[in-house]
Length: 254
Ligand code: NAP
Image 1 (tube, protein in one colour):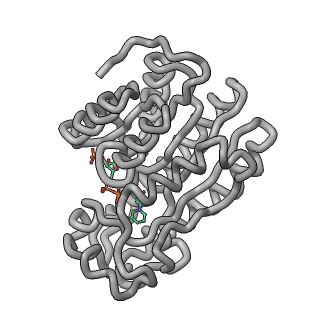
Image 2: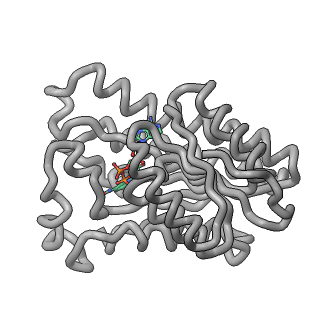
């Protein structure tokens, strides 16, 4: 949905991939409350994307929804082009769109599922970071937050070691890119959530996974999407002005 461009230069304009549902949707709502205008990327669920966008607008933010597959270079360019054309200079990126494929051991995994996870979680993050780096360097700076996972260090044996590997790649991307872009005034950080109560668990074939997880977590419960959104919002904010290259674990101690 298009909105007219008249954003003051001082208003943060943030691209959130996977903003229709789960952690991305909570992030859109939190950032709207913090005064951001938003370009919300999603891949399939137009109803969910428009529902989240309506809540952003009700909170006073401007929001453009753009249907994209972040593993496609042309789609990523279209997302950033729409953000700039309709909201103004992009100052933030939340690289959040991610998939796991079905739960199971690597020995049983299908090649197409491994390829899709790497395409979306790693190539997609790289494409979005590259476009943000180009735009933000040209416009004087910005901030990127990559949504990683506690799986990057836990390894997720029996569940999805390929997904864990893609998230370990996210952490390396975050550290390396923060060093490349510091001189351009661009901060690059990551959050690493533990088990968060979203649709992702149903998509991987275990809808009750978050509800069952409490006993294995020091804080005794799964996380809520808004608790990850709060960490993302802080990393994007001026309060985090000297923070770059860090991976902030938001996992209830796991
Ligand atoms: P979710 O509820 O399943 O939502 C996934 C979001 O990503 C949706 O908005 C979906 O769009 C979008 N998406 C998926 N593939 C895409 C693609 N190729 N291009 C563009 N958008 C795409 O997931 P979530 O739990 O909020 O997870 C968000 C991030 O947190 C992911 O990177 C995930 O790995 C990470 N994470 C989650 C957990 C957890 O326990 N939930 C833990 C650690 C890390 P549609 O609505 O259109 O399908």
